[in-house]
Amino acid sequence: MGADKANVLFGDEPMGARAARLLASAVGKVTVIGRYPIHGYHFLGDKEEFAGPQHALRQFSPTAELVFVLSCDLPLFSPNIVSELQKVIGEAQAAVPYVDERMQPTC
Image 1 (cartoon, rainbow, N blue to C red):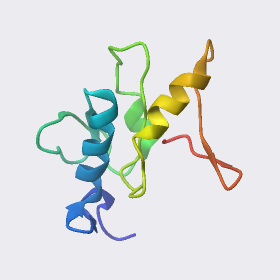
Image 2: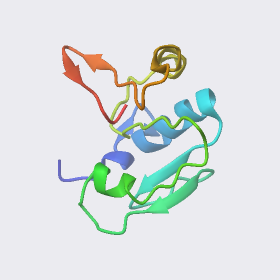
Image 3: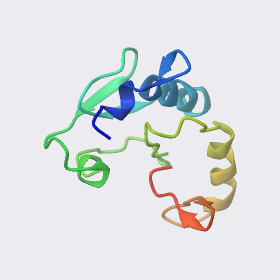
């Protein structure tokens, strides 16, 4: 892409800040994992630049029973998906949405 996705504007708001704000409206506490912090949210910096989201997530130690993972490059994200996934997770270790028959593991 040639640019930091989190800082790409969607309307007048950077996509990373938008994702954090929308997710916080559904879950409360948000931890940003990446290269740069987003003001107002807990931050866990990447240990290895450009290693990808799965590498960064291995650093994260959740403190809640359920964790919602959201990529910063989903500008059309709706916080309603959080409660919908909570309804279907049951005893499973994860609930992953599908969009156009493709699994979306970072949402």
